[in-house]
Amino acid sequence: MMTSSLRETILQLFRETPNGFVSGAQISKTLGVSRTAVWKQIEALRELGYKIEAVPSRGYHLLEAPDLLSAEELRAGLDDSLIGSDIRVFEETDSTNAQAMVLGDTGAPEGLVVVADRQTAGKGRLGRRWLSPGGVNLYVSILLRPTVLPLEASQLTFLSAVAVCRTVAEVSGLQPTVKWPNDILLNGRKMAGLLNEMSSETDRVNHVVLGIGVNLNMPADQIPTQLRYPATSLAIEAGHPVSRLGFARSLLTQVDLLYRDYLENGARPVLSAWEAYCDWTGTMIEVDCQNLTIRGIMTGLDNDGALLVRTATGVERILAGDVRPVGS
Image 1 (cartoon, rainbow, N blue to C red):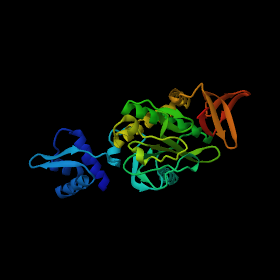
Image 2 (cartoon, rainbow, N blue to C red; image 1 turned 135 degrees about the vertical axis):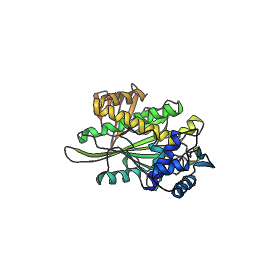
Image 3 (cartoon, helix red, strand yellow; image 1 turned 90 degrees about the horizontal axis):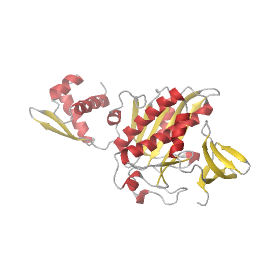
């Protein structure tokens, strides 16, 4: 049994007896290893930040778990989920999307999740940089292999957005809104962004990577002031720190539920859910599309996720661009 699997099994034993003790003999028997090996794994967990007491004749007792983005902790509660069936955690990487794309190209299973504590080359839409300091935020990428046409894969961006919004509401009670095509806002400030990337052929998708970056506990003095759009974090808006682990678990659960619904019922329920989080519908907006600016009333999303804008000459379908309300 691999070392990480040993630790995961020990943590599972603790979870099954949350208010009690687990004897060294029980752990040894369950793992099929010696008592010395058990002690070494307990020490390894302590080094990771787990507070574990050892009481003679009673065994080990888990007192406190760290807010640690470990594969062992993330898997807790995801037993029946497609999303999170395989989890890879990096203390540091260039980009979780880049790692997930490589793993997808080499045959990684659908549902693979790549998480990093910090990124050195985090990226946003249109090649923009995504600031990714360690210890405060969530940077996660999810590998999917939907049997859809390449043109339909963009719909999954809206799935990610709805999952983030539902998670924010669940863990904080706050009500986020969305900005087309891939931003999540709190009080008008950006707190999360999405970047989906795809490997495809002419008529089939090989895999899609859902990239999600969420500002969770980033303090105000870490947020750059020179940004295209004002930014914030969930902790700033909620007034208290947020568990990265708890948020990540909830997010993966929401993605799993939404993806199952998407596979069964298509994109329309997801798009409708996204529209419910959008407070710009019915308002005057401007969309910068390369060298062209389109101005009109936002009316919603088309079935492929295109933005629908009613202008003086008719309804425009917009597939890419930067949106802002008129007057901003």
